[in-house]
Image (cartoon, rainbow, N blue to C red; front, top):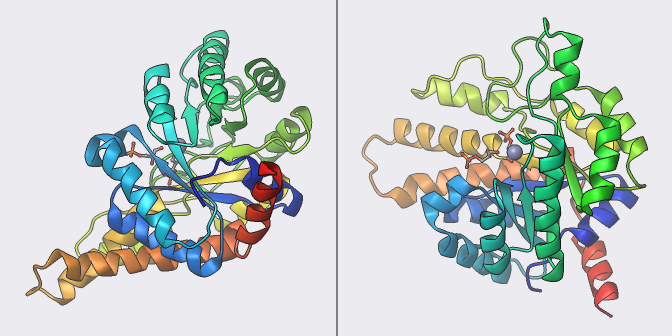
Amino acid sequence: MPLVTTKEMFKKAAEGKYAIGAFNVNNMEIIQGIVEAAKEEQAPLILQVSAGARKYAKHVYLVKLVEAALEDSGDLPIALHLDHGEDFEICKTCIDGGFTSVMIDGSRLPFEENIALTKKVVEYAHERGVVVEAELGKLAGIEDNVKVAEHEAIFTDPDQAAEFVERTGVDSLAVAIGTSHGAYKFKGEPRLDFERLQRIVEKLPKDFPIVLHGASSVLPEFVEMCNKYGGNIPGAKGVPEEMLRKAAELGVRKINIDTDLRLAMTAAIRKHLFEHPDHFDPRQYLKDGREAIKEMVKHKLRNVLGCSGKAPEILEEIKKNRG
Ligand code: G3H
Ligand code: 13P
Ligand code: ZN
């Protein structure tokens, strides 16, 4: 099975009210940990690559590593996605360079400019069988003292979302409902604007795939382990997993996770080096990092995203569509 787009994944996920995990990849051990987890869980996967990842590892290495993972995974539906493409050029490079899905992130632009840019990428991508994610609204945490006007200005407007999707022809839409990137998402209690999410779902075409960025839970077990073995990341807080389950229930079909991978890998490596000060072979500690990623991703696939065991129904749908 070659790399696939997200089309059939999102269709089946909508039918079954589950979400697909989109995991950020930067090196071989991260890719192997995630793909091993998906293999054991028979789950679909989106592997996503940021501009920073391309800069760190080089485009060609990441594409070849993902191709190798695909070959090693048996028959899993895996999409390769560009995360937060900031302009047409990077999207074009990834579309031409083997990706099956790209994100054009025009969320910093005024509405009409975001539409124009997204439309341009959609036209180029669709002609080449690649799907496109866009973003409307800006990610930010909900602050207790935020004014309503500010709140409305940052979060995705449901009417605008409907107009945006209709005018751009985009395949999925990332929305801002209170999540943010990184390990410090909430100062007080975690809160997401589910009422807004519901209104967005109602305004969009039936079963239109919604994407949630900044969806790491910043699992306390890994934060504590990092801090215990020499790290210093106090006050880190993420999106509680029951909120992610609720988001999937309401219509979120792609859940982006990067920070949880970083924390799992770093915690395991810190622990390893602390317990084995005599070790200096990178394979010894990277193995532990890879294993921690695998176990964390298995937990997400099974207990949070609800997509364990869903690979066969997606593969069947893909085969049906290919005739
Ligand atoms: O959305 C941000 C992702 O976590 C990627 O982060 O740009 O540091 O690779 P990065
Ligand atoms: P986290 O920082 O919450 O993992 O979000 C990742 C993300 O949204 C990548 O696009
Ligand atoms: Zn993101």
